Structure formats: structure tokens, C-alpha cells
Image (cartoon, rainbow over all chains, first blue to last red; front, side):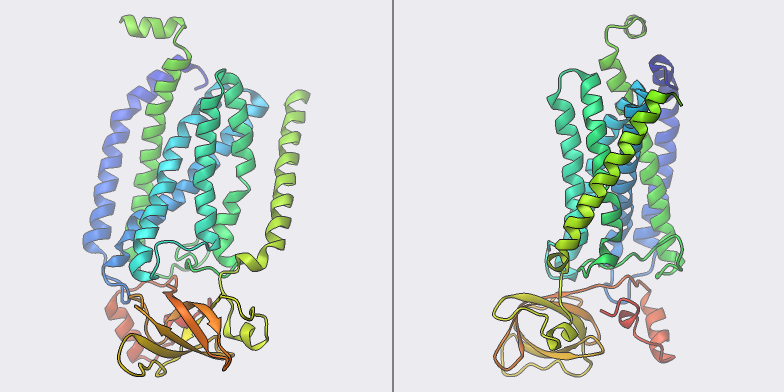
Length: 237
Length: 152
């Protein structure tokens, strides 16, 4: 897996399969959420943004943890593939963070009465977006990509401190944002007809992440290894 | 693991612990600013700032919402099941505003101890359920879900 030509071919083989599985999960999840799930007793149909918002917010934190783990591998083991996975995850994570913020904001206006408040959950999630953008900016600002990889690894690891803050913000402080409806240890505070589509959507987003990651890693590999034999052979064939 | 890698790993662990402790202290000292709202009990205890805008959060007491006069002015009592404060507000209320609902109002206290709100936000809880289930729960006399563990 650590060898660039091998990973390039491996990812290429999996791309069509991943696309198909992603499409199936996305369609099932959206149908379950937007059509089959019952309306909410208070919010009516407006709550259905949850089927995008919650999985997107989960992904925003999950992808950051992937980035930070890669960062540790980069700094300790100096693995080139980890650098590439780290930087290729960042735009996908930033997009999910942005999606979570925008969907939450659109829901907030009719339900809370405001698009945005500076409460702990919203603010820490916004900081997460800035961390992603910081990683992308820092990587772009350094020309030597091996040096850039190590610099963003440090930033990604330091930013990891924000993840538990986001997660527990609604428990540690009074916030406008509600506490979690779905947790690992407690009974969910919604019926299965609502949380099953959320979980399916979460799976769909995870598969999408792998899909987008593979494509980005392939592009980054070609760029970084542009002077190597295998890329030359690939281009000529 | 080679000694060099071990050293790098322990440096990273130290760095993360250092940053976490730093951020922890910073958040601790900012605790009051991060708190999004005060409760009616906090106001009773004099913890809320005087002559300054702040937010109060609580549950709208059943049967206290009234509209004195024409227009958009609305009055209601806000409680945390401990203390109660009267809130006066002129403006458009969010969709989720209703009796028994957790809300957050932004404004300040007047001389009579009433809370004059410039903004009212509805706080949603983590409960979602179909309308039929809610009806059934009401019939069987179970507690309102918005009054559960998070109070507001």
C-alpha cells in the first residue's frame, strides 16, 4: 500500500465499485429520510435537513481525525503515502464542514429564529473549518512538498484538540444547539424510522469520502511522482 | 520501534498534551463568556449582569403567554423549574415558540425586574418523534419531552 504505483492501480480498480455502492446508499438514505420517515411532531417537515446535516457534521470530525492520524504517521514514520492521504482528505473534510454549517444555518433561521449565534457548538465547528482551510493554505504556501507535508502534519495534530471540544460543547456549556440525539451508549431519542436513514446517509458519506480521497490521492501521486518511471510508462501507454 | 521514532512520537504526545492543557485553561477562564445564557435561577441569585444585555434561557410556563394590546408585543413567564422571570418582547417569534418550549431571550432587566427582550430564540431539544407518538404520549399523560434531562 505504501508504494505509489501499487496504490495508484489499487485505487483505480476500486473507483467504479465505490461509486456504485455510494450511489445505492445515497439513494436509499435519501429515500428513507425524505420520503419514508415520518414528520416531526414539532418541526413538521423542516427537520428533514437532519439527514444531511448530522452525517455531514460527523464526517467533518471523522475526516479531521483521519488527517491527524496521518499527521502522526508522517512525523513518526516519515511515510510519504500518509502525507498524501492527509492533504487529500483536507478539501473533502472542509466541504463536509461547510455543508454542516450551511445546512444548520438554514434550519436555524425558521426553528431558532436566527441563522447564526456564537454559541460553543457553532463556534467550534467554524474553527474546524478554519483549521481545514489552514491546512490547505499552509500546504499550498510551501513549495517543497515534503516539508509542506510535515508542516501540515503538525497543524493537523495540534488542531485535534478542537475535536473533543466540538463533541462535548453542548454538554460542557449552555448552548443554543441541542445535545446529541444519537450516541453510542444511550437509547436514541428518535424512532428507528428516523435514525436508520441518518445512519445510512452516514455510511454513504463515508463511502463518498473514500471515493473522493482515492481520486485526489491518485492525482496527487501523479503530480508528486511526475518524474518517475512508472508515471512515464503510464502516460505513454 | 526505533529510538528515533520513539522520541518523535513522545514529542508529539507532549505537544498535544501541552496544547490541550493550554486550551483547557483558556476555556476555563472564558467559561462565563462561552455560557450562552443565564437561567432564571442565576438572575434570582444576582449572577446576571445589571444594565447590560445578556441572555436568559428557560421553559415558557404553560398558560402565561399573553398579548397585551394590539401589535406584536407578547408577555410570558420563563422558568427553570426553580425560579421564574417575566419576559416582555415585541417582534416576530420563531416557529418553535410555544408554551412548554425551551427558549432563549436576549435583552436586559428593567427596574421592576422584568426581562425586556430584543430577541427571542427557540431552543430545540434532542427529541424527534412522529406526531402520532406525541399524541399518544400526551394521552397517556407522560411528561413533555422538552422538559427532560437538559431542562431547557
